[in-house]
Length: 181
Figure 1: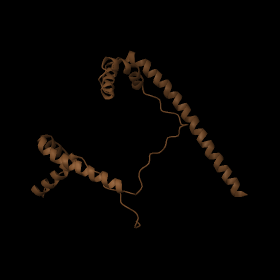
Figure 2: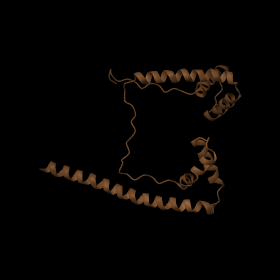
Figure 3: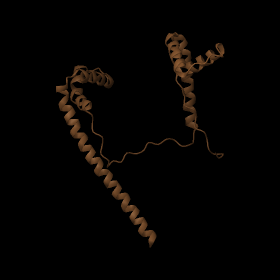
Figure 4: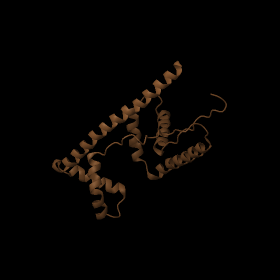
């Protein structure tokens, strides 16, 4: 690494992770010769986490908040590479909705009208419960429509891939011919 290269700041950890690290250190001090596998240790740790008081958990939550503030501050000063999301090609076909999503679209307005104070999450949970209690005969139209949309998507995807390969092939051929000349 050169002088200008800077290490990416260490990501902040949750209150549970702070507790787990502390519990691990205490466990090693109390029982230095005892070996626990990860599964056993995780089980003991989670049991202990559930049993401690809210006041004790607040200490670890405060540590997590401080760690989060540290991370955000370090990221503001960080100059290195940031992860960039790959841009989606606007010409590429979009994935079709599932049968459940089609069902949800149809029932969203009704659920929202019956319960205007519900959040989107609450409406989605109610739609999920409705879907799970709906019998197969009522689900069938949504599943058929989803299957048709999926088939159409795969056809469009295949055509899109062929079109992209055609563009790459033409580019490579033109590059080869220009090199020969």
